[in-house]
Image 1 (cartoon, rainbow, N blue to C red):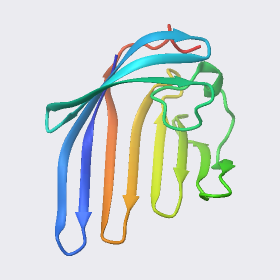
Image 2 (image 1 turned 90 degrees about the vertical axis):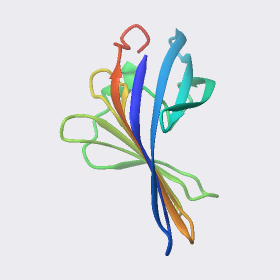
Image 3 (image 1 turned 135 degrees about the vertical axis):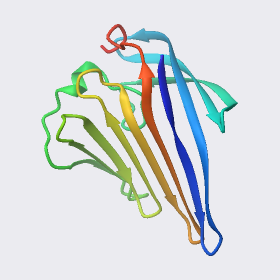
Length: 155
């Protein structure tokens, strides 16, 4: 299981900012070399708000809770653009932090997603989503606060 806690802040022009506490737990259900199924339970202000089943696999460019062992050896220092969608102009890039963590960023004009993965374990350590509209900005941040070893599932 992986555990995350953080905040979701919404700033509305001329109205101030509202901040809510959020949390999530991720429980792995099954794993194969190319995919993993899991359940995510999310909490808003310490109240369970949803439970959903999900799957992640090798075709997923952005958004997983962990990366396979093969991705952890990626040798990059400064950000490298790995994909740009010609229609949406969403750009996906990858880089490394000084501690070796792998950073995947997906950005366009009105949003940015940042996922930071542990250099050894491959688990997502940090997530930030920023969505900008003409009248508001919403920023969600989650940090890994606990979790078991993913070595059995990280293939």
